[in-house]
Length: 496
Image (tube, rainbow, N blue to C red; front, side, top):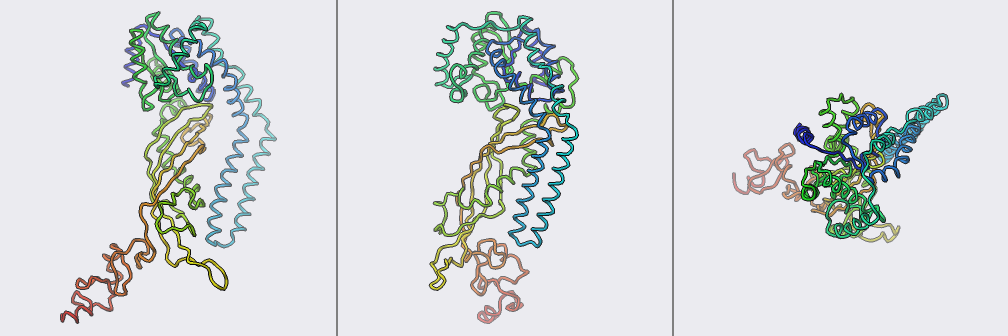
């Protein structure tokens, strides 16, 4: 509501609206219903919208491929359905491998039955598609008109384009860009390495077009971009203060920077437009909601577990391990602790939202030391004692998330793809099995029983398996209880 009021007050003065090419191109990534709503909203604001020449050029270069991707996505619905089935099958097969490792009975029979059921599902799907060959026709019908392109054509008829910059103007901006990028002055410096030629300066060129027009025509500016990199936004949330200052210093006017979500939802409210349910869901499903749902679903934890389970020492700094000679090493199949440290939204491109997440994990690993070979069988002999290494590490994950916006429930219908995962762990501490508590077998034993075996603090305080004599400090079984608070040995020795 605060932002809505700010925009409303801002609109009381003379202003223009500029959307960068990412906002227009992203309209293609939504379902036709949602795209129509966005276009209708832009139509109502067309007398205030201006289109920079660079935005026109970027849109013209990319709009056909963006529309083609959406058509292909719709035509590929049967294939995506089949992929989901296969993905589920792979997940179940992984779980069956675990059952097989633990020697569960009749696993092969179970695998064959499950395989048969999955094949039956795929056959049923293929039969339906073959008998109802309508997906191509529906796709052609829905996307027969490029409404975003039509909006651009209408805006040209209304003379809402900035004039093209001259070659000399472009050259000067590019030269200035080289200096700005070295000093990381926004916007555009994040494109320096990922783009070539003049394209690496497109963001700066658009910005310079905005400055030139606003200063010449004495206009305030509502600037909308879905480029969330740090050369437009600070901490992914606040429009860059350097850009605000540069605009105000150069034009003597005001600027508000918005992402498309902020723009669409606040303009809809200001214009009293009814927001369709699907659009409302998209607005509400923000970064925090998505990350929380991802964590609660356990998807990330499962992915990390699967990455680690058969990895051995691949993700471990072995130089940090105590008493480890490389002979035998195995990670625990369960992560003891996993904590999300930080996350960020990296942008939305080609129908996918991109994220980075960083986790801290703790888990145990087990190793034994090489003792030699049996003189007769030549088999390797390892130590009787197992070393438990208590590991701590960090996991960096890059995720691409494709949201199926044809679905009624965006929260339930999305897929994630791990683009990159980096894991490194080091030992925090270790425990030799010879030092483990003989009662629980989990914790390090720092006390002892009457046989000289280690007992942990927790088991020392548990009297279900005996009692602690206050004289000798040892834990003893009830048969040695003198019934006077001491063990029989101490009772005799101290003459109690």
